[in-house]
Image 1 (cartoon, rainbow, N blue to C red):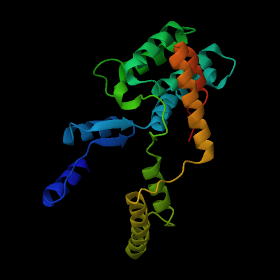
Image 2 (image 1 turned 30 degrees about the horizontal axis):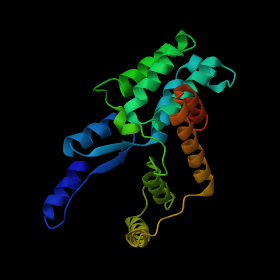
Image 3 (image 1 turned 120 degrees about the vertical axis):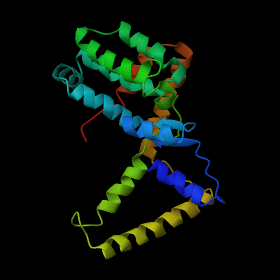
Image 4 (image 1 turned 90 degrees about the vertical axis):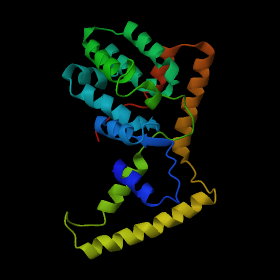
Length: 233
C-alpha cells in the first residue's frame, strides 16, 4: 500500500508529498513496510492498540490473567501499572520500567517483564519508546477513526459479495461525506471532544502535573493504569 501511495505521487509531480507523521498500530509488518518506503517518517503509536497488545499477552497466560482480573492481587495491581507507561515522556519510560522491575511482587511477573523489555524498551527493539510514549495532552493517539470508517463501510452491505453497483453507491455517499469533513477541517472548524473523554483527559493531565512535582513514578503509573486497562473486544 505504501509503495502504491509513493507511486501515485511520482505520477503527479505537481503535488507535494510531505509525509512527516503517521499514526499506526502495533503490527510488526506494518512498521517494517512503512520504514522501508518512508524511512524518515515519524511513527506515532496508537495507545489503544498498545494496551490491547499488552492485554492479549496477559490474557494468554492463565496466572497473569487471573491476577489481572483480581483487584486485590498484588501481581494484578502491578500489571495494571504498565498501562501508565505510554503517558510518560519517552525519555523517562525506561526509568518507569526499572521502578516496575524493582517492584515486581513475584516470579510470575518475570515473563511479562521480559516481553515488554524485548519488544518495547531495549535499544533497537521493534517498538521503541519514542513511538508509543508521550506526556498526557488533548491530542489523540488512536487509530479508531479509520477503523470506524471500515465498520461503517462494511455495515452498508448484507453479504460479503455485494453487487458492484451497491458498492459504488456506498462509496459515492462516503466520498460526499468525506468532502464535507475536509471542507470543515480547512475552515479550522474542529470537532468538540465529548465531555466524558475530556474529563478523562483532564484527570490524566492532573495526575501528570502532580507527578512532575513529587516525582513518584509508581503512584503516577497506578493512577493511570486503572483508567487505561486492556479488555476483550
